[in-house]
Length: 99
Image 1 (cartoon, rainbow, N blue to C red):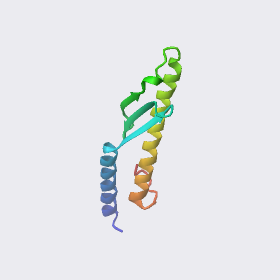
Image 2: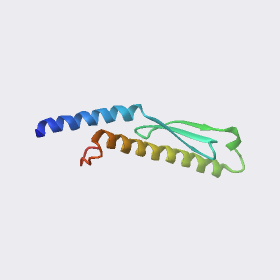
Image 3: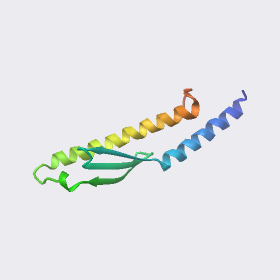
Image 4: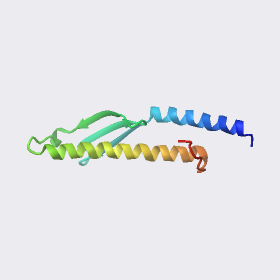
């Protein structure tokens, strides 16, 4: 295979992946869905939704923990989605330095 053509294909796959990840929106939740966090493919926090029942002035620490858990879950989902998409694009072939 022509190395120049292969590099072009790799660059094209990278551009496609970057576009897909930029459009990706993933939600994580905690506390049985009382706290929800939405992040994009760059793992930027876009939104947090907190159910009124999760707000207890006497237990702020639990709310803080649920927010952290929801954001972390969303972040893990982004990693899983990215891994899945890379695998689908490369047919499971590991290309060093691709992503």
